[in-house]
Amino acid sequence: MIGPKAVLTSAAGRLAPKVIQSAPGVTTTVVRQALHHAIVGVGPLPAAAAAAEKHLKEHDNDVELAVKHAIDNHVRLAGVGGFATNIGGVVTQAITLPANITGMAIIQCRLVAVIAHLRGYDLTDPRVRNAILLTLLSEEKVGKQIKAKKVPAPPMAIATAPTYDRAIDAIVASEVAQELLSRVTGRGMISMAAKRIPLVGGVVGAGADGWVTYQIGRYASRELLPRHPETP
Image (cartoon, rainbow, N blue to C red; front, top):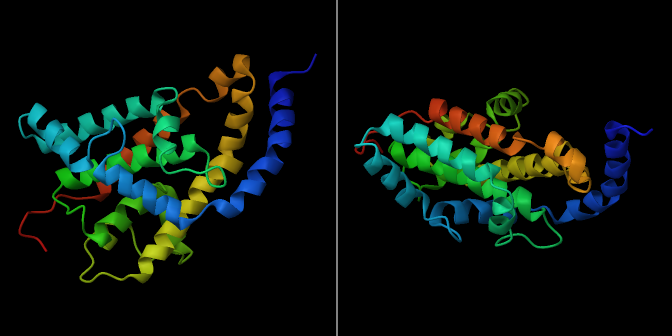
């Protein structure tokens, strides 16, 4: 009898060529579009700043409680079947990333943007936007990329840099694009295969997106320290 692991490996192997063919379409433009929609709102998701203010009001202006609630809320969104796919379909085309991957990026960008707003950052500032994107890589990955000199600094340092360096736009967007692609060809490959096999899919993919979203939210809450309104 063929076990679940063998079935997954076989299915993943059949899916690999399709993923590789789609790889050239993964561009930094998609990443920037995901960030834009995360901040200004898309579909049923209001703008990040408005969501942040709502969380703040619901928690009697307690910023840290609002941050915690925002993380919990976005973890739930990440776990809603089909939600990320519907959101991602707004910015995804057939030749780019799968809609569920792009949608998850929007949800995670929005979570970091909400936290940034709550902590006093200006979401229209390109430095802050680069910091939001960079946070999606995870704390561990950011550390590795800094050591490898692929990114110049952690999110907090980029968000609060004395001046805006346009060159960082392409660097950060490229790193995030590669990270999203890895979710398709790496963990995402098995997940995609599992979705073709209903009996196994629930086991393989259970909670994965929610857990990653939680980790990103926790990283953002530690990294993006509070800024006072008068701070430039």
